[in-house]
Image 1 (tube, rainbow, N blue to C red):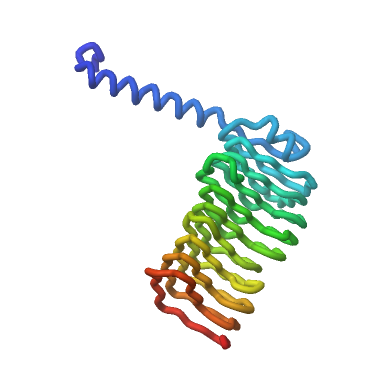
Image 2: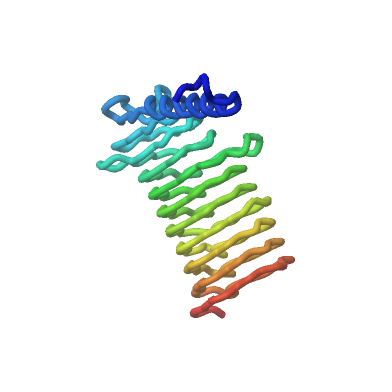
Length: 257
């Protein structure tokens, strides 16, 4: 094909696609896998030297906070990775996978009130233990999957965020507030008081087992859909406060007063 014979608009489109493809190919080619401790002694040192698109594979135990402001993936290696401090995600397009976070504060913090909205953040196959709050998500869009959290107050605390939870086991409550959307699928919550509380947040909860001491699901100013939910050992299964347009089907309760 001779480009000189193409109409001007076709030539422009062809050149645009060619340039875009070249940029994407170059970005993918420049992505690097960084190994800790082989390449750098600690995860924080690896982060300093990482670029957007890189993957940091970590083996071992480290007592340091990670403030992640680059679009990277941090993955636990075959020998396992334990971080004995918090992780603060400050950018979009970040993945955490196969990590154990053992800390007495907040395990994972995503975003902050004054920050731009964060998107495409994934937490996969992680285990959060001994934390006060497992995951605090502010002004962000986050997917949480195959993750466990054994915490003292909240397993998950979304604020003004869009959060999807799937295939997880949580040992304390979820409290979502201040707009956004919360969806949960195939997840078990052993709540401290009320396993799920949505306040000014709409949601979708499917295929869940919920147990606790008070109400299984509290919906306050919320229009949500619930299906295939099992409640156990609760005072109230579903508690509605100023909520309309709520759909609930295939709900069962065992040992609930």
